Length: 191
Image (cartoon, rainbow, N blue to C red; front, top):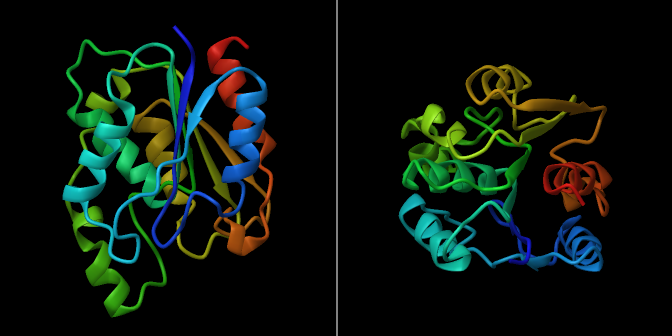
């Protein structure tokens, strides 16, 4: 079975932004099959659209399936995994600028993301699918509070990496390569 990676972008992002194309190319060069699906209605992301879209993209997950998310893509991955039957195991996942809370939102932005922030996720169910979990944060992310690092470390038993001054770790912050994500996926897969 070939190793598959799904990179899930965030709110108002596209598969061509930031570090996604670089990571896709690097992983493909190492023999992975990689998809960076365009998520639906990125200006107004909705749980009831994004989760089914990811389900359709992944098909049948297995121990050779790896997930990488950025921002809202992390929420999507967590909710996707929460709904999988408990006997399904995946190779691992990496959350980049993942969140349970957000800072500095306008009232309009809050209304868009309110369901994502107020609909609880059972992180115990998520953790049951793999022991390979890494979360990556930036010390100066204006959206994601660093306190979320502790949440993921405690509840998911995730490895936590805090990068210095990388903003929201996005293309808007000038991030075109993210070697740490490649390193973690290669570690998970034994490649």
